[in-house]
Image (cartoon, rainbow, N blue to C red; front, side, top):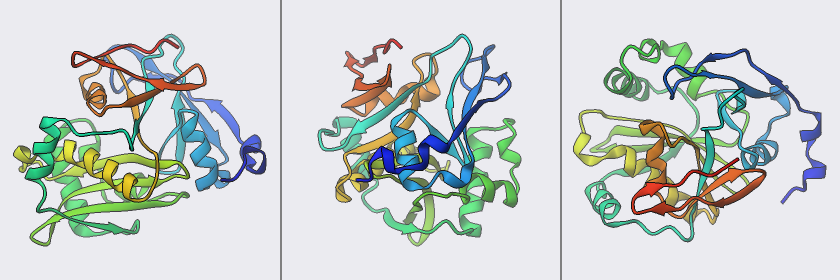
Amino acid sequence: MTSLRELPIHRLQLYLTAPYPCSYLAGREARSQVATPYGLVDTAVYSELVRLGFRRSGLFVYRPHCDACRACVPVRVAVDAFRPNRSQRRCLARNADLALELKPLAFEEAHYRLYRRYLRARHPGGGMDQDDREQYRGFLLRSQVDSVLAEFSLAGEPVMVCLVDRLLDGLSAVYTFYEPELAKRSLGVYGVLAQIELARRLGLPHLYLGYWIEESPKMRYKNQYQPLEAYADGVWRPLPNEQGGPRRIES
């Protein structure tokens, strides 16, 4: 593995954004620490940044850096130790008929239509449900790291697409969208399980899931994938699941 001294990470500059409304906790303001210039962030550099709690959206590489809140906790699944629970095994069985194909970051009309259906059903009125093709390309198809689209199809038609970054020490689950009319399949759960299995097949030890937020139902679900590790105070440590409920990691 490339050593940190060989990476241009020391040439990166970090700046803070202005405050903006938090997407996850009502009534709070958020700020992000952004890594620039984007041209230095290749797969090796980004792998190190993810280990330090960063994520990306398109070419935008960031981590939360809020003035009075530390609710966003970076988390990752320990792939080799993961064992699906009973509910997750049922989800795997329900979706055993889906075909997986890894595709390059290229625009496909069927993917875009699926993305729009997903946003209209899951995030109506949030702004993203109005995304046009150029916004879609900028959000999902622009990357300077090793990224793929994991397409899951049923009878030849895509029903779920996962944008996945391939890091030096794992996979990073960037964004997933799926057919909202197939609610009984629990495709959101299956997407995470499938990416854990993909990381295992590739011999990668971690699946990075972004941020766990105890107070946000939209983000709290990540604690279902055990063993889960959380990053705080410069260290990755276990995030236990006590009787089905998460424990806060102090930072």
